[in-house]
Length: 75
Length: 217
Image 1: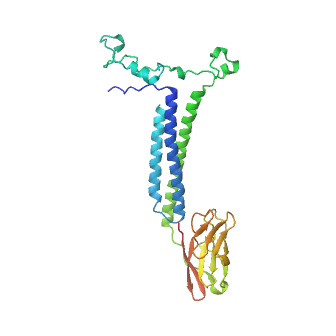
Image 2 (image 1 turned 180 degrees about the vertical axis):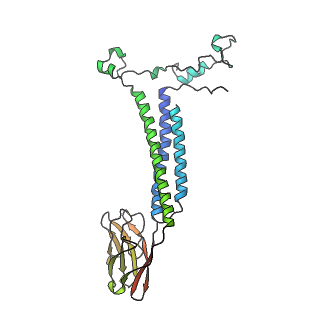
Image 3 (image 1 turned 180 degrees about the horizontal axis):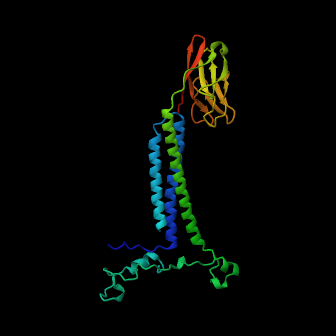
């Protein structure tokens, strides 16, 4: 099985890709920040119901971010 | 647009009608052999800001020829790495809350504790007590004789709240937070949650604290 040929991108194109990925990562990190503050507020108010779903959602964001970073580092 | 990379790439992929073309060696398709070879794009070559060749640049620039576009590219990629690290820190924070939640669930509820006698708090007055442990709390007797008790720690940054019985509020002097005296709800300022309520039980002349109720609204 031969490797899929990959186009050679110019530096300007690669920088555009970095900007795009950076935007996605930034949005996900802001979402995680909101999630953390909301969870902390709920937990301090004795509401434990959101703790585990919030951990799952935050973990999902981290996995997405790691995937995007992996894509970026391979470029 | 001869220099357009997309156009160049498509031209390179154009079908070569010559079946015996030497460039096709090793390929099963009809594209030239060097199509996928890395090549140097003109815009990838570093140029000085004044666009003159490097030989004509001052000595310091020849010695420290910073490739600004490449530097930008690397800096942004490093910033993405930093953001992903931050993302990991947030997950660690969430995991810490979840772990603390497990510990709190297994902790025994605070016990019953005598905190005062009714004679110590005449109508329109308040007194301090600690419950559970050393946590400062306020026992307040309203003008109508009703007893309420709250944690004294403001839910914003844990400053001590001050009861203003005539105004019907508890005021936090640090950042002007205001709580309703009758319910403990946050009604103004930065506090995000109501004050925790201390559950009371009055038996004869004795006032007992029996538990703490924290709330989000």
